[in-house]
Length: 502
Image (cartoon, helix red, strand yellow):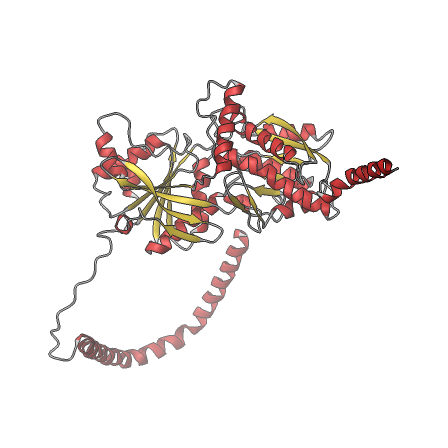
């Protein structure tokens, strides 16, 4: 009998354990859009191991999310229309519960519009353009797990306000297809509307006209660039030859992903211009993503390299490196699991995409590289670093300041040198005018002179007015009837013109 009682208690606890641990069991269909082409820093080879790592981690941790069974389906994304067509074809049967990606702006726009209409949550480590910030209608179900370009632009706003800069020239390379640099600097242009901002587009196909570019910087204080490393080097060499790197202008390069479209900050090419390039780059500062290191992230990086090596992707030497996209898509799985669990605990189903999406916004959680903060609009608050060349002889860069998006704070590090960011020779003070006013003072003397000139002018005007007054009255009486007719005709012509233009 005691044995039977013990057995009953054991089975009762087994049945009760899911309730006690808040474990909810659910199958979730996940559709992931990643390009097969490894030239993208968010290719399938690079990112898929991170998503699978997060899936396994959620399953085996034995915690409250271990009951979620993620069925992950990877599909090719070509940054044009592939993802949209796949989504439509797949949805003829069973629609996905969650979409991860796409990253490219134009492809993401179409997918997110359709997913928002179908009430499917979309989480992307891309879609970073300013246009996606409007979540009121067609992008209502988009959550951006990587900081957007507008978030990056907050760094420039903080720096400009710190140094009282007011003007900038945005120079960007535009390929007219994916338009990475266009969207990058669009964020700066969008956020810094109160500043004097000019733009200069460089065509990817045409020869770089450094003379024309440098001609456009003369009435600005700061030059912010986004383009490939070779073009950046060419512009800086040309600026150095013209002695524009002597402190009269501040140069920045936006280099978020260390990809071919952004460059890698390197001045060294092994040619005869290396020495000049090193000196020129001493005036070039870099804005990039803040990198944090913690034990979990180190283990994650090791596992990513092992996964790529095991898959045998020998043609992609850097595919094992963890970048913002790899980290972001990993954290996307965690964020969705948190929101889904919370929604289901409150009586909602996985099919209520809008409810799950809202629970991913305005929250903070622990990601693989540190704390992840989502704002009320479903966009990740970004942390960015400002790098400068601190050793000109060696040509090496160092982080000199950090910007933390959640708190909107700007942190100056010990390597920061204010002189490096001080404009020289641009704002000359006016020399004082010597006092030759016989003790009256400059302003008093000026008042006397101006008063005398105005008095004389009024006397002369009064004389001519009186002389011509009688003639004017006589002429006005004679021409009144003709003028009335002309003015009426002019008004009718104006009305006709306005209607015809409309």
